[in-house]
Length: 359
Ligand code: SF4
Image 1 (cartoon, protein in one colour):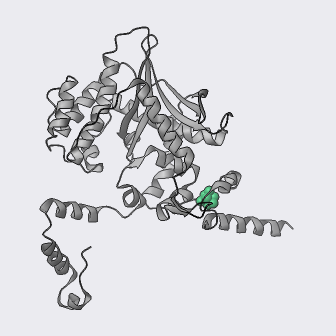
Image 2: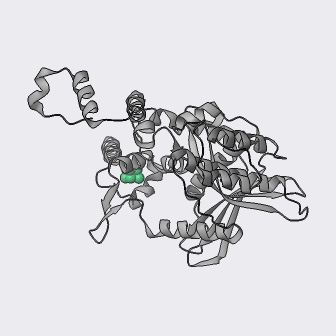
């Protein structure tokens, strides 16, 4: 909103003031269009805090405690035990997880720097990462060895829903002998103990989301115009030379725009020999990566669909955030917002009222 001195406010109505200020600022037509679009966007958590696209970990965080997720949006900084102001998610184990992911990626892949000039360029590179991963599988010529790709971006709106997701799949592997395609998620552990069911549950949901998004991509069930709309991208913008050359070097000389890149991805994904069969989580010890605990599990589509039905109204702003149920109150012990949590207070009051009645 342009700032205008109150003294001149009486002489204009609001629209005239905005037009006057924009004129002074000499704003480009593209910027004006972007601002107009922003004003049209709904005022709900999905657009207010996530610009219309959720990360897969947003849903995991929501499953853990929706009220906590909402507090993170409202108060992203907290005081740590040393009295320092910290971003709430800047925890040592999280930083360790990021380093471990990079290490695992570099075991089988080489990082290449590409200089991007526009948002479309950087999305062109993300699509290239997907093209590379899928094309590698399609051209795999070692019939007795598993094909592995790591850190592959993924996106989509599952089951044609209103929520749009993006994420990075830690590992996809394919066994050419059995035609089994597996999605694997890496997690770190601080101690050599298997995680509790409450912890593995959110991780399983995360893997199931990745499997569903990947399968929808393979089956061609991805809405092209929705992709460009949600990420606010211009499909026909020319990609810069650096990005075009990367496509060319990998055997795709005809990619000039983001739309070309998107179509290429769809064509390749559609040629994939199978949809995902397995899902697994690999827990790795932070201090010693040789300690691993692997959990494999079956997909439960009905459960995922039910979860999305429950989650959607919060993101669309049609219901208030909810905290944990009484049987999950153990989660409150580690929560940064325990002292201000209205949900927790309400539940504690409810509990003492019940207790009084019983006495
Ligand atoms: Fe959720 Fe408990 Fe934290 Fe409240 S105190 S936000 S209910 S985990």
